[in-house]
Length: 437
Image (tube, rainbow, N blue to C red):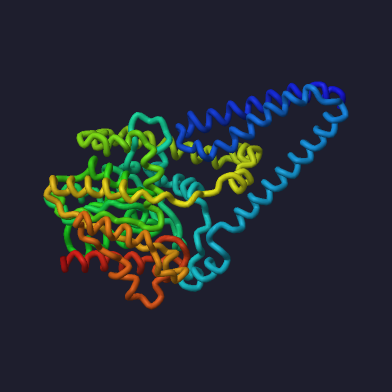
């Protein structure tokens, strides 16, 4: 104990300085300053600990002894709480026992409870080229030479599981969810941009929106949607991949996440360039090999993070407890003028391309869960689209108002993506509007 008391202040000071250095690294280098608000708490804690550690050089040995006992007890409590939060997270993971039982009764199959890494590992035994979905937003804080706006090309790609099974699709030459031959058509009737709903989360082809539109119209459809895409990535995607033979551009807006996505995207320097310079391009069509390599690196990092060693490190860093205490998601900052600017530029781009632009509004799940019809964002967005004179395809009116129980269009009536029937009805709502317009 005497040795511990003698070295305690030095050890305390070194640990505090190390915490400050690590905070600087995570905040300024790893996240490129994108999470300064989150790391402000850690800056305050680390500076306070440095000051307090210096103070401990001047306190009595008895006070040091009591302080050591207090710190040891606190650490023991912290790791006990971390264990509790890990356990709580595991038991609260989707699906619940009721969902699994319901799925079993309806399909006579077991709900696939494997993680995405687990199914990837299992399928890789038979197919070495199997891949995992890596969204463009995964790269927003990375220091890559380019910002990919698609996934890995020409690969079986594992997506999500909300309907009891993992959806898997064959990506096209640019890493999107299309049959590759769609790019060879002389005329593209519809080109879609959007987020996970457009991408086709948790359903296989031909049940996603793009496939349904191909079936309904018997014409060519290109799907450039990808998981977590917000308005700025959608616009950048059009700038990079829009074909001159596209007749109609369908911009799909997910009301539940797209403003939140926009706030993250606007902090990225490469994405900002698309707004500042109308001639800016990353020439992504010619860099698919580089895009594939970046995404493959991300997959390898995910596998590494899933190892026992990485899980132990996460536990030692009391990750779950810190997130529950310090990471409180702030209310989404709505930026109507920024959205209006992006959509105005998109309309100009469509006119230059001799394409017709349509805006599809997908309503929030919470709107039907709570029964609250007072949605200010809805009217705000509708007014923006009206001012820009863009045809507004309102899925609230085209689909959800016609349903007796609209919440059942979502998987297991939860805040997830659509069921197969939900995707079908939304696709029909879009197509029926287009036929009338």
